[in-house]
Length: 623
Image 1 (spheres, rainbow, N blue to C red):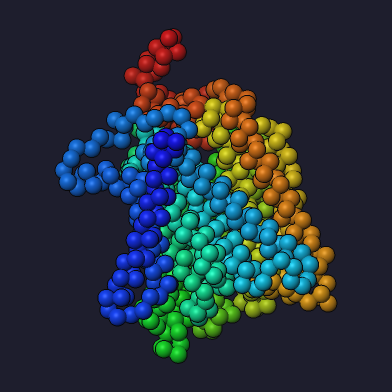
Image 2 (cartoon, helix red, strand yellow):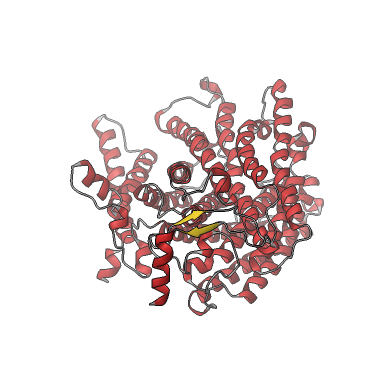
């Protein structure tokens, strides 16, 4: 029991509870001092703010920074010997690999929660008429499903980036280990604040939280805003850390055009996260202030403009789509040459295409507003800029096709998910232009066609690639491979189920089914298709459950991963044992001597140990 209460996360949660009560009490006291009656909403919001800060204090996240501020000596991260075993994952670790796993576990938890919320409202939609939910409950579940899964994707991207990037560039850790740990742990109380929206009346706005509905809605919308705000802080600080790590901590000889392509995708993603995330935080913060302080940013009757919110929101939220998919596309480009045994076609073009997508992603937000009253003279420029995104994206597809051409393909589970990602993301790309073209978007906007298109983009750009990445790098975490049979069941069950679900969504959308609607007219005859969509969703849930069982089972009973199990050229596979030791390359410093993707070329090498470490490595093997 003593060990339990000494865990950082338990202390943090207790402190969060205390901080929430203190924050609510302070707000009540301030209102009483100035002669105002008790009001629940401001007290709950300040309580949520204080609770998040107190969580980090209880966890110990500020301890080292406080000691630095008062002049006490603080050990360098590489001088700290952290405890071994599973308990370290419940506390404030500075090891990028531990933090990556922490991000991954939180991502899987959020993925399960968000997916479960979807299954609940899918049961409601399986038949016409209201079955188990009222309208407010339905809209709350739809909104939380969207935002919880967005948070899950952000955490999943941070998981792979944190674990893999330092290993691929030859770094001992991230540039700022303490900031890295802080970036993860602030997302934990943010998750509780976000989910608490259900306890405070829910909200009816969907995940976009447009005013004036969000200005007038239940108090739950405030917790939704506050939770997303802190998740945004996690994203911004994590992006800053990754940018500095990639630019400043590469191994000897690793120029920018010799870094692995996954690192290029993370760099492009981090540039978007660091520069755009403030906009969604600002938009939500302004609505919070309007509700709490009576300011009028978005209420037309008081001189506000609700379209301003949409500009702020979508200036982040469309680039955010590329935050979600760019790392996934990088995973595809990283894994494909390994299992095709050919060089990645057009490496430099693929690298630059990630930066091109990041840049053009900032120029397209207006296509979300074609039906919202945006000035007509802006529609055509935004339409053309939206279609322009297909150019750098097409570069990646042509590279993948050329890499596959006449390759010596192998089909282990990571390759299956990589190929699945290409197919599903292609469908997302092909179904995108109708929603980016003014004439068709006016008919399709806010229908289930958009839902189907978006799910194709997210599954192809993130879900399939992240599963490929986990199956591929799991041995680096545990020293064991995931079970191959369960992995193939996972893939062959999830893929057709997803196709049924997404095609069904687009079909009913083309027939006029509106999104975020709890009921529909039985005369429209959507019942059979909606039932198929619901069955597809449940089959996806079963497939993911099999994956979770595989994760837990294989950690102890999986096949031992000895040596370079995938025959990769990347340094984490050619130089490091599995699982990866502390401080990564402390015993294995290397230099780059070739190209990263020269698969199939006799005698070519990407990296080799430096002379000092080569002799040390021989001594270790001799012992």
